[in-house]
Length: 225
Image 1 (cartoon, rainbow, N blue to C red):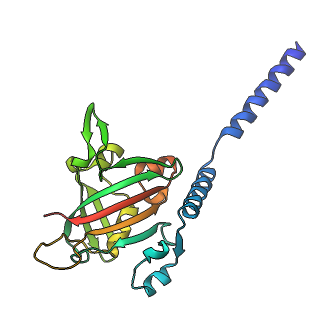
Image 2: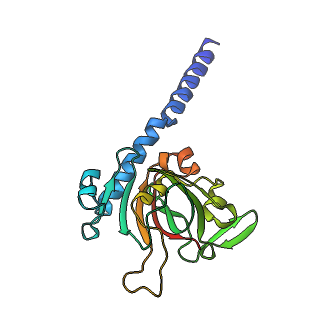
Image 3: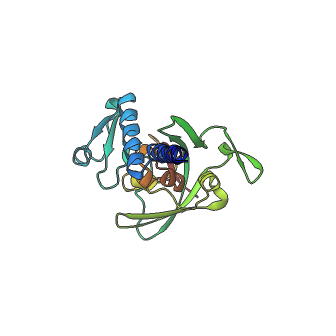
């Protein structure tokens, strides 16, 4: 009997040890996220610059050097591909902005969602061609604080992630780019604003926050008529 009890005790201890070994803490997940971001930066040949250098460069990133500015306060990395046409986001005024984007899980090296080309999303039993949707968000700027929400019937992000909240990382560029739209009557560069972002879970979607994974985004911003 003692031998049986002893064997059972050893089995319980072994199972408990295995359970502890397999349990991943929040700190473990954050470390895995940091490693994934660092690996992505190295693999893509990204040159990270400080906010001070970014400001000294007139709030631009040198594309020829594949520069991204790192923001200490939120952990977001940003590359401005185009500052765009139009004006900076107006203060104390609600502005509707249209976005096309690619969302990629950096850890899994896989695309989650996109509306920049034809792709398909099944939602509530219906299948949608995501390229037919230009995500629309309502944005308000108060000083340097920007809040925004997706317009539900006009947002793949809302349909997929189930939240009207715009990821905080998406709003970082709105302090630096212009929000407008091409005007055929005006000569010269008429391209809308475009950025690349590396967004940690704390600044990402509700899904990213819950599962602790970082995302890479390509996003264009254009004012809605």
